[in-house]
Image 1 (cartoon, rainbow, N blue to C red):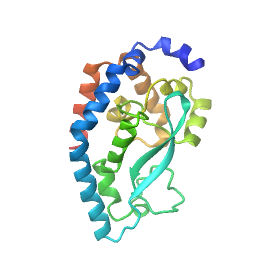
Image 2 (cartoon, rainbow, N blue to C red):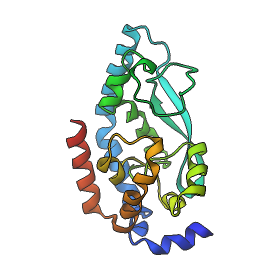
Image 3 (cartoon, rainbow, N blue to C red):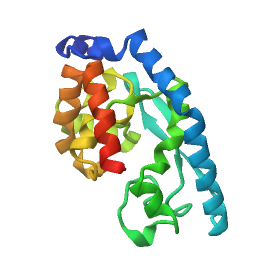
Image 4 (spheres, one colour):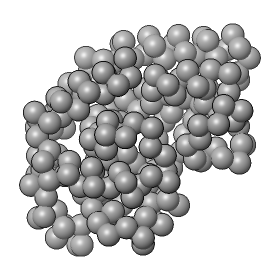
Length: 200
């Protein structure tokens, strides 16, 4: 109920939750389906050549409406590593190809399946792990409003601060709320182009 009331504050929420926006997500999935899976196949082969057995990583995240869902990523950190549920930049924590996969955001490509399933969008606030989410809801006013829409693979906050970690949620929040207020097809196109520019 609180989220429904809060949605009235943001002009972009109706666009983000529209059937039109969902159709654009699915269309982009169909256009990128084969290129994405070619890259994933090459990444799988490379990980096998360096002796990495585990390829895919599944993790609980918080989505629209505060509901949990399982996000898919390529594994970039050791199995059972104590920081496996967090984002880390420490080279010694990463698998042999982990730094490369993260640098080019290849580890995020399996989330095309989350988009197809309707759990994510191509563009939106990044989904947070439950522990960090519930902590941020307590500490940061307005943080819960991010759950008014589907989380995204990329987004306005990500291009403003591409190297942000879970500890930077306070700095990212104003960018996410700006996106909820101003979301439009034009802004989405801008975000996609800037994402390609950052990670090209």
